[in-house]
Each structure stands twice: as structure tokens, then as C-alpha cells.
Image 1 (cartoon, helix red, strand yellow):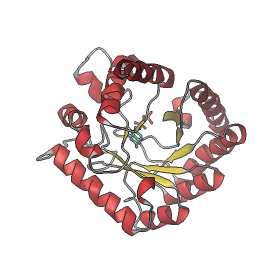
Image 2 (tube, rainbow, N blue to C red):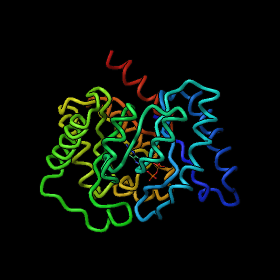
Image 3 (cartoon, rainbow, N blue to C red):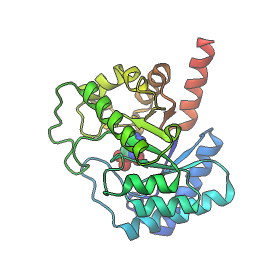
Length: 260
Ligand code: HH2
């Protein structure tokens, strides 16, 4: 899964159109590099990130989804907490709703996802993006994340979602210390054992700094991101959410060739 962010604030002098244009160019590149699916997001969930209004988020992601859909059949995912954005994105051609709140943001998110009939990614997060990294605590992080994901998957099935459309994600970096993230990465098989396809997003994330203090620039975290991708694939993770598609595809191909 290649990451496409449509966030105008990340471009020094760009407006909405510039961000959409840049997102389409970026999407073309990720498709050429071998992405199987693109995750389109219009709101950063970075620790401390400001939230974005519904109108603004729609204005960012829908034109990008329509433009990519017009030129490529690649599966698309919408990365949003908002059911209205998910609804519009599915109408524009997205087939997956990736929700970092595991469909808890609105009381009827589960029902909307069931109605849309799309695939969903249910991710674990402790707290909220603005404050989640302040002081994350767990008794047993792996057991608690697994129990949360199992409960959300069960709730999704009760709401009417087909089991094979439900993906689980341990939420690396979402209300977790570096030690919590490493414990989850060491025990991915326990998330896989829940019986749903598992997605993993660790690409360029901040916990890598705990192992390489010099990697202050996220673009400097490729080696660690590839290490996590390979470990995830070995543990049975079915979808890797990454920035560096070509390098990840290459690393996975080599691992598969070695494994025979
Ligand atoms: N991480 C981010 C956003 N969405 N979705 C899933 N399923 N899993 C993740 O780990 C995940 C996610 C992180 O978002 P952000 O910090 O905004 O940066 P970027 O989108 O560039 O990764």
C-alpha cells in the first residue's frame, strides 16, 4: 500500500490545486513502482497534528481520488476518520476505508461502513492523535492491542460487514512508546492469529529514532522501514503501508526469492 498524502500545508507555497496535482504525480509514481493499492489521506494523524474540517478534507481528497481513478484501475483506500469523507471517497472509486480510530470516531461509523460494503482497516490507537504520545501505558501491550482488535472485528461483523473485508492493524506509533512498538513488531504473529488479514504501517515512523538518533529526517529512515517490512511479511502481514514502494517491493522480492 503506497501512501499518498493530499495535505496542502506540506507544500511551502502550494494551494489546494497544487497539493492535488502533486498527489496525482506521486500516485503515478507509486503505481509505476509496483504498489498494489494506494492510501489517500487528507488529514495528518501525526502526534500533535491539528484536525481538518470535513469540507476541507473532502476538497483535498475527492478530486485526487477522481483523478487517479480516471487514469488507473488500481485499488484505492481512503484514510479518514470521517464517515462523510469515506462515503464520498467510495462514491468516487475507493474500495477500502482505512480508519485509525477503528470506526469509533462517530457512533454510526460501523453502520456506514457496512452500508458502503467496502473493505475496512481497523487500527488500534490509545488516546487521540493530539495527545496520544504524552504518556502511553499498557499492562501487556500485545494482549491489549490483540483484544481491542478482536473486539472491533467482532463489532464490525455484528454490524454486517463480511469477515474477509475486515483488516486489522496494530497501529505502530499511535499511543505507543518505542518499546511498545517493538513488542508489537516482535509479536505480529499473535495479531495474525486472530484470523483476519493484517495491515502494518511503520514506514518512516518516529520510533525509529530510538534506535538511530541521527535519523531526524523521516526520509532518512528507509533502512529501518525496510527491516520492519521484511519482519512483517515473515510474520504473515498481508499489507504494508509504506512511503518507499520501489524499495519495499525490491526487498520483499529478494526475501521471497531467498525463502524459495
Ligand atoms: N499511520 C498513519 C496514518 N494512517 N493507517 C493505518 N492503517 N496504519 C498506520 O500505521 C497509519 C495509518 C500515519 O500518518 P501520518 O503521521 O499522518 O503520516 P503518513 O500518512 O505520511 O504516514
